Amino acid sequence: MMRCEQYNVIFYGDLASGNTREQLKNSLAMRFHIGPHQLERLFTQMPFLLKQDINYTTALKFQILFEWSGLLCRIEPTTYTSETAIRTLPEYYNIVFTGELCGRVHG
Image 1 (cartoon, rainbow, N blue to C red):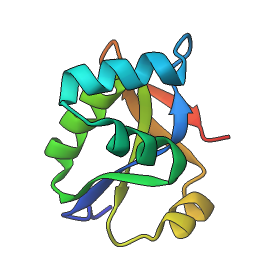
Image 2: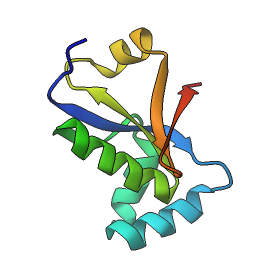
Image 3: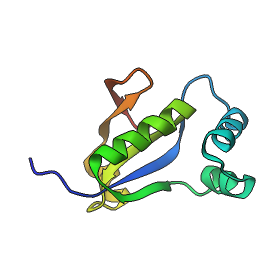
């Protein structure tokens, strides 16, 4: 299988278990120096593109950083639109907190 060279990191609104939006807003504001207006957009304009057109290794690093903060995000090739990716890739894999590869089904 040939890999796409560029990827997007996208947030669809899924939060890590045990986190509330308010807790995550505080955590993200401190960790990433994000202002209140940007945080509000993150939670109201979904899907939200966190990072665009980056290589796979960089996408994994951002995914891990965001997931450690409590935002569960997906890495998708830039050749797919969001709707295409959801239809053609219903099951996806993400690195979650421990660094282990875990399968999750987007619901």
